[in-house]
Image (cartoon, rainbow, N blue to C red; front, side):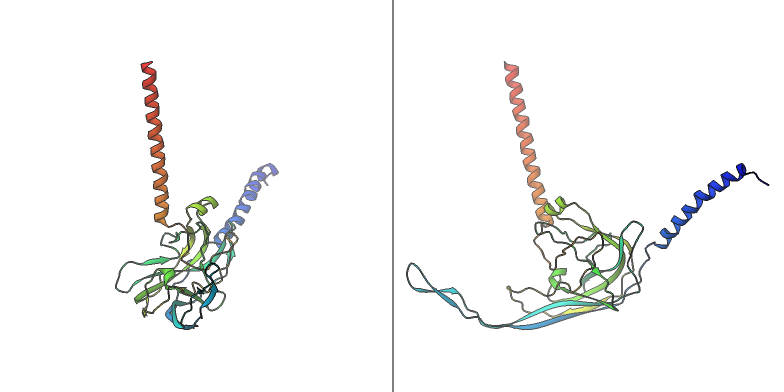
Length: 290
């Protein structure tokens, strides 16, 4: 029979091994699963509303005493708006918080192209998991992800302008399911000045089969905007930013504006350095003459 002094090292090793086994088990159980390729349908919806006529209003000019028009009148007219509606069949999934404290959810990603083209456009994330648009800017807009609903289907409604799709022709659509979490890539200062991107981290499914729709050209009023941009109410994770925006486009700084600002700052910097160098040279020449 072994003495207690001989058994002690073995007992000590077992005590160290047991906690590590306990820790490994949840990490393996919480690995992010790869979602299935989604099934969906897409249709183009139009709605015509009658904009009522308005009568002009008048006021008295305080200097001439004559009556003048304050606001002009307008005849009634029909306004037709159009938007896209995607109906995605949800797959079984329950959101959870992983071992890093991240709220893991099921999202949907879109890609689309002209039916006769070959280049895909992505929204809201490109194949690298980076948001395809910049958010923040002076009006502090935020990304609204396409969260899966808790019902049988997720309905996504979005205006054509939100995706940069013209009001005519044929468009090919595909949908991708994503399980993971979303976080922004910059601090508050960067968001305010430059705008920021968002990153998706997790697992993505294969792209769905292609659905093609035909968009009929419609007349729109310059005083009206397409509706809606999204019918989803996003589920905010612990890392999400509150008060998301509800429409697009927004007045954040575009990439061209950002480049212009950087170029101006760089030019001013070069002029300052050149002026300082010239001043130093003149100062040295005066000292050498003296």
